[in-house]
Amino acid sequence: MDYLQMESYLKAISDHNRMLILKYLSKDSLCICEFTELLDMTQPAISQHMRKLKQAELVTEEKRGRWTIWALNVRHPQYPILIHLLSLLPEPERTIETLVAEGKKVVCN
Image (cartoon, rainbow, N blue to C red):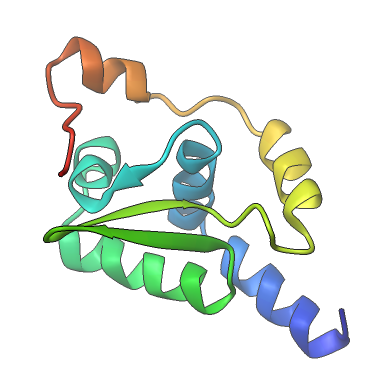
């Protein structure tokens, strides 16, 4: 990794909402509609964060019909470092389990 790659990597993870997105993705693959519930943000706002994470190659996407399921890129050279950094953060206030309990965890097919 050179200086420009490191700068891009650090910029991608240095936003509060992107850190939350990455923390959620460290637990499970999710679609945008689930992030809207977890983060109380609009779909376009979340899509912009996902675009930045994708440009940094930190996340992968899988198309399922009209849905896009996002996951951490386990093949990223810095994946082990990212997982370690995410483990240092507290659990978010809203969790995937909260979505399940509220009946808002969806299965996008």
